[in-house]
Image 1 (tube, rainbow, N blue to C red):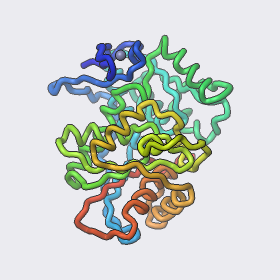
Image 2: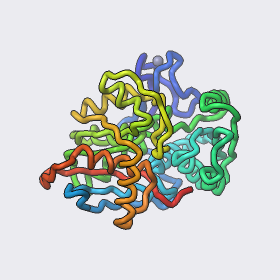
Image 3: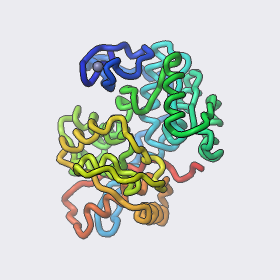
Image 4: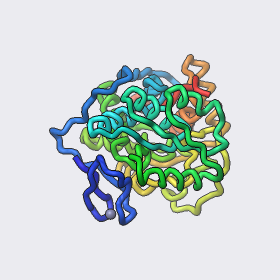
Length: 329
Ligand SMILES: [Zn+2]
């Protein structure tokens, strides 16, 4: 098993401190078929349920992925990354997410006995870091902008393993399990609708379904307020980025944007946007059905309703994974 550069193909060890190629290219994972990721660290993962619901007359399979141990699908990535790092003897990691990825890494590091340092902007709300603190991660608050946080994180990553949910391909090796579970539960769907920020879910399902031999059409949904993938996919100039309720996908410069667009194109899919009002409506619609999710999960549902508006073809299978619980904050 090793990492290799997606541009120049140079090979790097999984256990090394390099988080990207010296040429600037991003890593991909090479893993021989017989190589298995160990599973000594567990927080009691389950196969998350799929429930069929009719939303505005459209039949949809909701994959309740917020039922993972720390409350989001990011646990899939943290599970695989941390198990592999534990096996490799890594004792300390750094990560920079105040959201679900940070909580997932903090939780799995706690279970693994790995020291976890989470770099955050100084102004991160107390509510957001409550769960990460509960898992006893070291929280390092960085004054200044998001770029300052990124710079501080990369500086720390020169000495400490960077367990990044964006750079580290082990994370995508984890999120791909979503595709395998969906395959066992409903087969290969015709469509899968996912929220898209950094692409952790999008690329995970792409890799998984690709391995399974058939791709559903991937519909990636962005917030209208922060839609760099949409703009690039549609060959439009970038729009100004403004705050959105869909915090989990508010990513202005997704590092893997080209991979994300290639995945959507390969699946014959599409990238669409939704506004905050629709996101909140979708979140409320789910709540009214007893399904309590974060706003970012509402993005995919709002996108699905928009994309399939007026259609009620029961022969097509649509899957919408619900990313994270509403119980955080
Ligand atoms: Zn390279």
